[in-house]
Length: 123
Image (cartoon, rainbow, N blue to C red; front, side):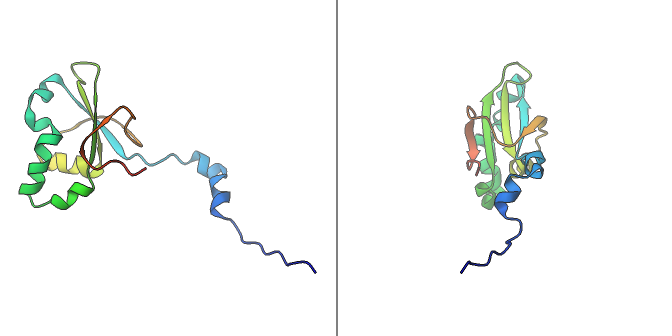
């Protein structure tokens, strides 16, 4: 006696191998913010120094578990430091009165970037 076979429909594994999965780009999670040599000289432009006190004074310490900022040394005076900031970090940075010079975006920071402030990325 044979067991009846049931069609379970499309599974998540089928979707992973479909052309749609290949054409869907991953979500961009980090904005790349360039800071010039002049920007770096002002301590207020260092998230590791200025963002924590701002969150504390503004009563937004709950955001500490959502902010993720990585940094990497740039290669020119105009881009001396590159900050890889997730969306909550950008919102707080702007609320602090900073105007980020966004030069790009990517899914995650480079492996060589160092966690500067907040929590590590989750993927």
